[in-house]
Image 1 (cartoon, rainbow, N blue to C red):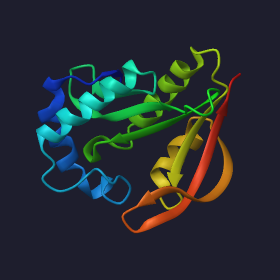
Image 2: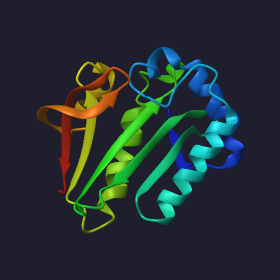
Image 3: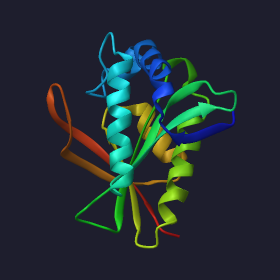
Image 4: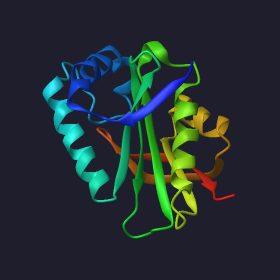
Length: 170
């Protein structure tokens, strides 16, 4: 499936809320912001934050869409203010569209986007140790497994073991 990544806009809010609510079975264990009865207003607030982060050079958060315009998920790059050579990737795909290579396509796109900035040397993916699906995406895209670190991700239950993967500038 070919995908399109683009910045969020307010018109995406109902589809975003629908995708989150339809995907709670795969989002809830890993994403603190996902919750039952997620509303369009929450999505619009998130979109406003993503626009500010983009304007401030702190992140590029994008929606993942099918060529027909159906919202498939979200993915983004976060830029470290302390380490200008470093950034990280996050992603989620709605449950009904998982296992179709969508997250892998998004990760590859974001890695190429990161390399457009000459100061970027490392792109990192952090995944909860037990999040097999996210870890599989990192491996499939060619990220190098660096090890397990405690506390880089905090869930409702507290800090957890985090699998660290990296891409290095070619």
